[in-house]
Image 1 (spheres, rainbow, N blue to C red):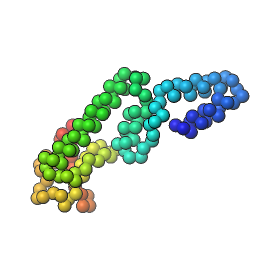
Image 2: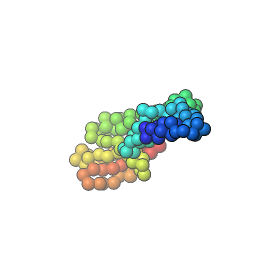
Image 3: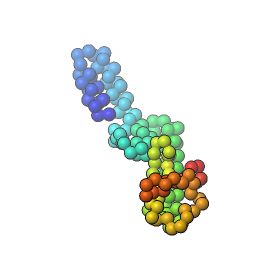
Image 4: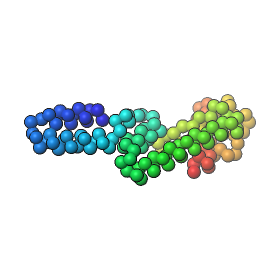
Length: 139
């Protein structure tokens, strides 16, 4: 975003007043709409979250409602993970997100005493960890 602003400022200062006026208008509109505090992230869930908040609040009512829904769903998913940690005595259960899979759980195999509760589905062993989901998480 910063590079775009520098490029636009350079062009605004060009000798062509029509181009400068057009670019100044575009620059002002971008500043009105885009939240400059939002950064690009490489971690999939953080990137998704950042994309949701790139447009400032109050610009589009439906976007604001969607963001609120996104935040509520995200909070419910994290609460679900906390409940599973407590209910099933799995303190090292991790909630992870990948673009292709979405949310899923990773549990160190050494933390599973006996058999994994039947609530956990799509169970896959990967190295020393178990990757899995639940119907609640999937919904």
